[in-house]
Image 1 (cartoon, each protein chain N blue to C red):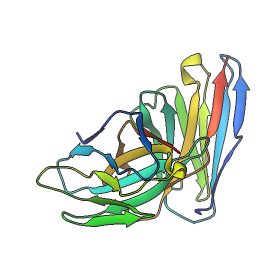
Image 2: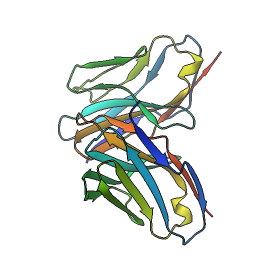
Image 3: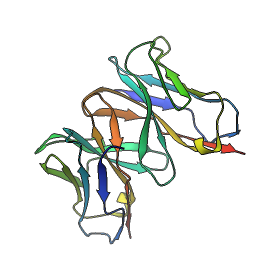
Length: 111
Length: 111
């Protein structure tokens, strides 16, 4: 079956540092890939997505590229802010009702 | 923001009692989902619905039932609550392009 593996956290970094969160997946088909963000006490929010190989999703300074050859969808941001502190989830879906989430990576940004 | 609400937002109940959580959407989307979120497990799918009166099981459906009598409402029932069902429950809707949008969550404690 499909699965998503993302790096464990917490990831702690200083403001303005570069952020990378690794995500790899296994899937039998050609899934759509997503990054979601969850702030404390809230539900998940869609951050960005990519629907086919070599697509780049981007939003709020975050980017991720769908790499079929390495089955990866790593999340990056060039300069993080304290407000980026949250839990980030990588996810995939290749059909209705079939959404697979990674375990989540907590990011802590210090001033 | 997607029009999705959950009620109640917090609930404490005793072991053995039935509990019903409600998810309400104003987006008229066909697909709706119930997840639970627990530390170390990420999000796990309980049940989902692909239309009125059409539902299916997810990976952790034991002890849960659902109903959908109207497009806008998706109910999750714990027939006889147990301490292992203490969790945060999230409802999500899907917009037809595999994008899911989440409600604010219900924190359920079973004592």
